[in-house]
Image (cartoon, rainbow, N blue to C red; front, side):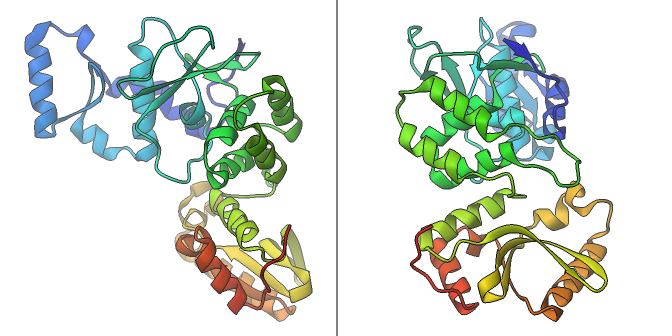
Length: 329
């Protein structure tokens, strides 16, 4: 088992102080406390996150979907007799990998194939073999990033698995965040696990994944494009004009003089993406960027989440922008 720095990226930092919000029945006195906590949970003053573990309701309301899932993971891990190996979506949450749908209710753990056991009480057990695939993050045993990607590539939907794989491979061109894995890491784990159920789909996800997707929204849009058979775009093409660099576009179809922008909310809300700029400045910069692209002869097609995540809607949207359909990548 290897040790991983607890601050490998910003998303894991919440784990270090999760225990400050968790109240464990086992550390309190008697049945009266259990009854009081149960009544408080029914009244909304407390939130039960696992068997015998509660979070104050006010604190719970402050947490986003991912933070709530991390609280469940920590609660389950801390109340086991032996430390479980967290895997699949639970490992993804801890490593800071994305989930396009909402995070699940179940906490995922992987056990040795010969260990046996059944899933129950919001804990989903996976009977799979281990290799050198377990790391430690903030005191939790977790499948490695590469192993987590391969596990999800065999079990999640193609779109969701590609988003996870893209994030693991992503190279931050501004050098703000580290690279988590490369394709050879994924392929090594894939080969070590062979044969396994879902291996064909897993290989397809790994081959489709790229280090050039800047967000889960771009990943999902790219899967929609593959589904509808529009011309395969170039990713992160850099454009210049007489003033210098205009920027990198999400998608580029040079033969059609068209660029595509998956215009998700992350661009405007994420402090890392905004790089210290106000929301007003971000909006003005995006308008100027679009104007400069049009001035050099590129049409700009933008779409939001509801279009990019729907192959049928994206098909109509890109056809209106002038792209043909029905091509195989």
